[in-house]
Image 1 (tube, rainbow, N blue to C red):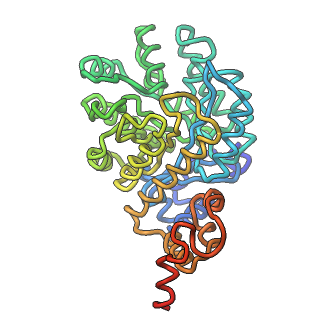
Image 2 (image 1 turned 120 degrees about the horizontal axis):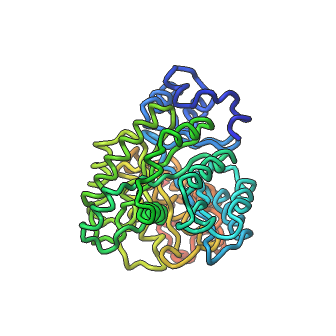
Image 3 (image 1 turned 30 degrees about the vertical axis):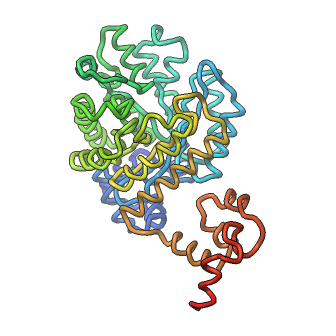
Length: 419
């Protein structure tokens, strides 16, 4: 639990920052991101940066920081293998994920989550409405179950929770929108179905103050979900998405006033490549909070290769302002990923984050260092600086020039001319 690691949490990190109290977390993040502790504190105070924590590990997300990558894992009600989810958590940490989302809805959800917590030190996010629905179906949920499930998960020591704050007004806008795909958010559709079946408003909104008190107690980061993201590239940004963003910014500002760190999810899903930059700029012109983007996928027909298509969209999103990316695997739209597919998706999105950061901040020294090693045909140096040096090593055959060029390697020939 954060309280046992970081001491007194009567105040949250945002409250410490606003009061000018320098915490170790601010110093550590400043060192990681080459910023001063004061710069970190100022941006946390303004809501521009959040810090997720798990055990003694911290992850900063937001303005002026490197783009971070989240990995989703979790069982479903038709496929549940606790050992596989455990393996995915281990893979995510080994290959450089910044955060992990445990989204199980099948099997013993709590046991799976606890095993994942024990498997990794990565900051952990959950979507409490998933477990609330998995307990007995949407028709058996009530407000108390929804709030109690969230409270229980927070008590377990998670780092962040996702709330879907769709309103009845937004549902009516979707009915009239003419979208091809409607609502594709699982969490958002569960909440919308609950509201429809019970002819009520969203309890995430009506009991928002109570939820903030729960999150404040343990300094858990609030993630406001992207319920109304586009489900295909022929569903562009529409009034419903814009209304969701306006409402979430209002909620995020309420959370900040209550001392709860907040990020906003927006413009994920499927977005035409030529519209991604505009969407990022639209968000940044309206919101100060860190932007979390799922994907986005700039095409619909890359089925089986969505991790590649998604990384293209994510590169553009990151480069134009997204702070936090949710990865996509080759199994997107098809089924639960294997742990090998988790690795493929994660590496693809780490590449996207790196490209995006080079657009925002300029080239990284690791690229320069690898290039120098490549010129010298220093293979061990190249493996050291590669995003996935382990895979690069498996593809390398022999010594000297690579097998593509052999004796006619341009570097070998030119090194004899240019010393």
